[in-house]
Image 1: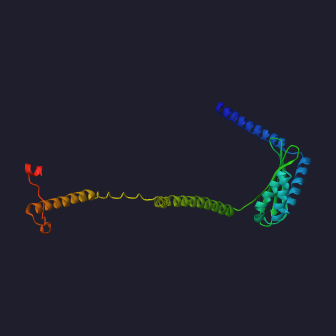
Image 2: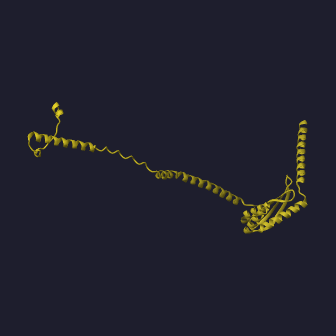
Image 3: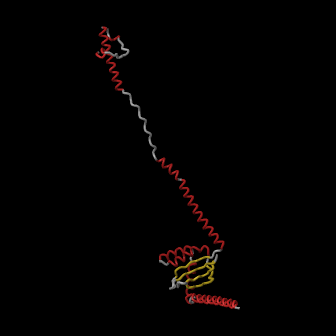
Length: 252
């Protein structure tokens, strides 16, 4: 009996917790609801901005964006830039499906418009400050799963292709280093080998002096023989001259 009572009390506690949570949720939802007058103003203002922007073609959007940038109206300039990036995927504006404005936690406002275009639906989201000034506006087309996969695959291929191209370029540069070394070595002049030292010339002057001394010696000897024999020196021919050791020769 006591066990049944405990189970019943436990069930009652759980039910009370669920009821309290639902009450808190309803209170928070009530707090987040926006004043209908403010919501109507934000809805109309966002729809007007959207309709004015989607009328622009590529050339007009380019011109308007340049003008707004010069005027420092960055919010509208970014909105036109967002439209330029998606206009090829959306086509012409058809109708507005739904509009919803909300207040954010920091006291600002957001307005979300779901619009139908020729090719697909587009979500237009605008952000406003507390004073109701437009801070940003963007266009987000709703792509199918196949389109998302194809875009992701294309981005992956482009990224990997870029990486491989850079690696191939680096490999080519590294492979050219050997040719750079060859060209650098060709530009340097080769060292000229030293010329062999020529053999010293024979002492010509000394040989000539020795020959002159021999001729004088021959003439003296020839004259001495001719005087000793009393004959003419014309018939005398000196074949060789040899020194002879001895005191007499040294005294001659």
